[in-house]
Image 1: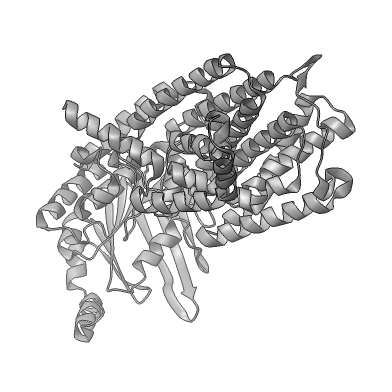
Image 2: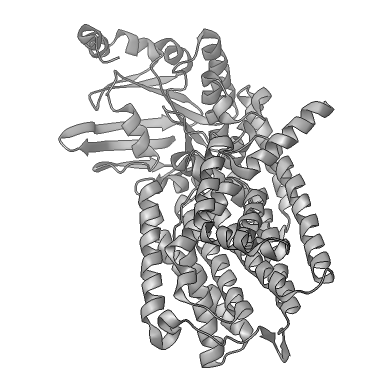
Length: 339
Length: 257
């Protein structure tokens, strides 16, 4: 966990980074649909937005509070199946389905917080990994609810009241509006007292207790919040894509989420969000670069996990603080120049 | 009236009795020292007083309230703060941020208000000015924007005291604050201790630097192998036969320093 180093002028660098991100977001929201509402591109960007939401939550848990989770894909799955089942099988309104998804994944987060009160580092990683495996088997075997291996299809589009969001552009805007809100809330959270308490917990649990921070309460809350965001992302995913299967919520996906946060850097929200955008675009590079040859795309997809692994190694060696530290370093250099 | 009252405190680790039937009182507005050879049970005593460890027997009462079985963070909220023999700073955070963590209890806004940015600005500003005040109180304000990991040893000890002060305690427990400090740093520490006491914070200090202890403390408790062997004002302690024997005995063994 030494990889998660933090810089000195955190808040200043964070602010400029967030500004860049906000601009980027606005550009994406306006320009992308104008550039031509291409179905494939929009769907890819839905994936990206969903990854951003999961990453924001995991950045809180791992990048700030220092609590590792190899179970986040499990929470995404809980959210996805809960909402899919409730809306399409039971027939509750979409918003109710999403709310239930968030509630249930939060509950899962509370359960997973229990081992975190006793376990640290590798042991916590193992416990959360076990959680993901159990959840995965449940998705696969509870065929009556989840459809098992064959997946759960025909999940209806999001709808509020009588209004159904059934165009690719509408879904895209919904996903990114939620992602932007989530990033804003999470980013605000880390600017103040909660973010500081989480970093303290990461730095020295004993020191945090001695400073009057209830580390038990804090861990439980961060785990629950992080799981809730993953569940929210899962619910969006189910209704945006319309089809879910257990393979999207396995351990390999959890590892990718964690890799994104490591590449993005600890003690930062902006870094992991940028990493989420870059890394989740990678397998769909052809959506942005239409001239890319089919064989390149196939290669990228076949070697996806290897590329992630390699990226992690390169980041660990060249920039142990991840993208966030690179952004801070550049900022620092600018300050020296102007001084 | 005694602020802190310790009665028959006992703690065993397996077959070893680290603290055995220790009793003493700490009076408001004073500096009390706990001294003793290595392994006398001083740090264990602090852990028992602050909820980091549970005693096997005895009682600890602070302002008439039982402190036993209270978790460390709640002990802090009741007004007892501490530092550690091995400083427990947040290495990646700046000195100012370290002290800001100490002000955590003064915030009303939690997760929801912070996420929505409701009334956080004023709270944050007030916490910052108090944190700076505490950095100045121990004389390390010039390090405010330096990450703890880059701060020299002597300053780190003072920084930890500033963080403890930021919790606004009535009783401050300092575990070897002068360890590793040079003469001039020790001098500054002594001045800081007087200032802190004069502002109404009662202090209990565990310390090896006998010179400092004799200087600052009104009363001394001497522990040896978990037992209290003497208690009284510095001048009497210096002449106490059992104290001299405990210390000379250790020097005779001359190894475990």
